[in-house]
Image (cartoon, rainbow, N blue to C red):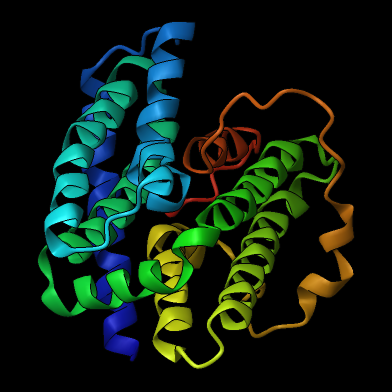
Length: 254
């Protein structure tokens, strides 16, 4: 287990080194509204439970799933282009880790037969309720918009971790109620939501791990969000959230 964690951490450091080199070579351009809008749509498409087309007509066969897999490839390029044109060096590092997680998780869905079967089993069980899971992720997105408003900057990362745990567990409990005898479906939800975000959060959450009760004392400090969302997806608000902290909480290459 220790060796796996060291290997994982080393890989993340490698990503950061690559991102740092690229960041020095490219001048950051100001973000335009049009670029932001496109990046938002690309990020939404990359996560099946936030992709409108996926939710409206979820794939029920491996052939139909292949169509979605082909559709997300340009979306990955879209976010990489957004990083080059619009983000500063630190934000590129954060997005690099997120994109590694998202790309890896989607690749497993698209290429691993066992994962395909498990994923399609989840869709078969919950296809009529997929909008509900989309709303759960939207609620997490709202939290990620609100957390930078917390005055105590040292609480922003812990609150991000706690919000993620909260909404992930709500999603898992929902699927258990929908499919009480389908244990594989609830396992798949956990695999998905862990796969998309855990690489980034595992680096920075520290003592605020999912098994701890430390979140109980702070989760209520997330303020209510009363404004329109800048982002509809949960990937890009994390970039803004990390930018809202003076100290770089990501590990830096020595």
